[in-house]
Length: 630
Image 1 (cartoon, rainbow, N blue to C red):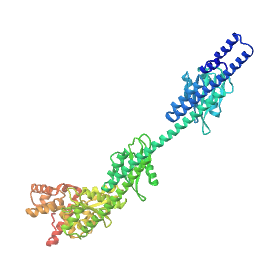
Image 2 (cartoon, one colour):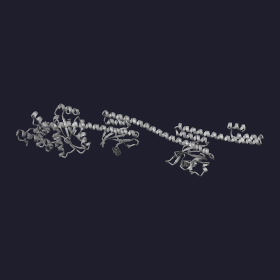
Image 3 (cartoon, one colour):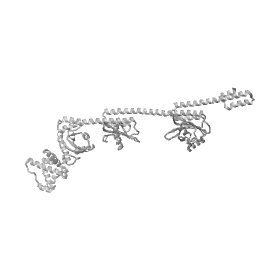
Image 4 (spheres, rainbow, N blue to C red):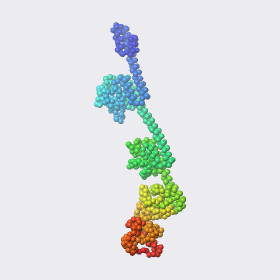
């Protein structure tokens, strides 16, 4: 081979330089065998040059593929990898533009993911229905396609908006290969020229290799996303487990230190970053100040929670709400309502809420056990007082002190006959009221009994008991009587119970009364002996009798004559044979002693009966005839 051709090969000269050597030899007069040998060397040199050019192209392709493979392991950003693939494919294929599309199966279209060399925004935003255009056909069939002149090629389904975008880019020749993953078409990679040309098999193979790398990049991105998601889930789970463990420790601490429902609610609210309201089985507030959501939706969630034993979402919208129930077997002790949240609860947080409900059930059961034990002790003390078995003052005070009851002074005994509702619930409510009033409460002989220190308005205690029992759906008829000392609590109980019986007989269920409030009706309906009659007289006109005994006056006779004369002062004076002014002064004194009941028509019959009993008592004691002021 001519040294000139070797030099050209070494320098990588263009093809024209080889032709120039041959032309120069011919012009110099080379002929015959010499010219034939030179032509042979010229042909060999060109074949070697073409081989070297293909080798360099192959090396460039392999280098690009190697760099792309390196990107797949080094770059986590899938968009950056796909852009690099499109850029290298455009460079190696000497294409005017390359682009990569991904399939949207839900929409049945393929959309542009990456473009390299696109001139118009319309083309970059293009979405092709699967099966339309060359891109849509490749994305649908998974087969490579190419065309030397797309606009003139009628093998493809043309659409005006597709042809318009293609014309805007002045695209002529297109080569498209599919992106495949496990036999499934996920998109396509395309190279285009703005001139009519063919695509040799080497270019198709090269673009197919780039498409394979793009598929790997997409799969890596999916796997990386799965790994990241799993890592996030693991971290979230670890955090949730740590939070749940912390919540468990705090709830256990509440139990060990004798905390109540309010403390449990505070821990759950703090851990789950919301507001917690605790309701009892009847829906009454036990703890929590915030007002929880109410309504049929909440009631339905509570029913579902009772059936499943799990927390149930009421609303998982902008402000999620959840309920969990505190159960003891099949008994519904209470409900925890978690509301005011910023986000939905995860599974671990919902288990924390359920654990809070479990601890709430334990606290309520423990509280019930303590209350029942205290009620039994109170009931025993109450029974001893009513039956007269506990008369030792020092021992009584010690037993009462242990129950936080004050029985040292005068007390009032309240007896309630309960109709409807749950009797145990009624006893619990009475016990709570007695605790508030430093007294005792319990059930005795089928009645709810309350013994509390006497105040200025004993009837108010009776009304408080009636109203408290009404919250449990119980209709209570209440009677009460004073007990000056603990020694007469039994007698006061009998008196209060007679008041209840009288109210029921009179058809006045649901009312509250003491003996004075029943008046003569109590005498007519009760089983009364001399003691009760004396007590009746004393309650009605006792202050007037005491005044007469101390001062030697005749106020009782004046009161009796005033009633006998129909309340006319002049007639009263004539009967008593005194001046009318004297009668007026006596009546003013009587009013001071008895209060306004003297002129209350509802009490006049009681006063007259008391006066009649007073006159009869005088006859029985002295054998005198009854006073007659007629």
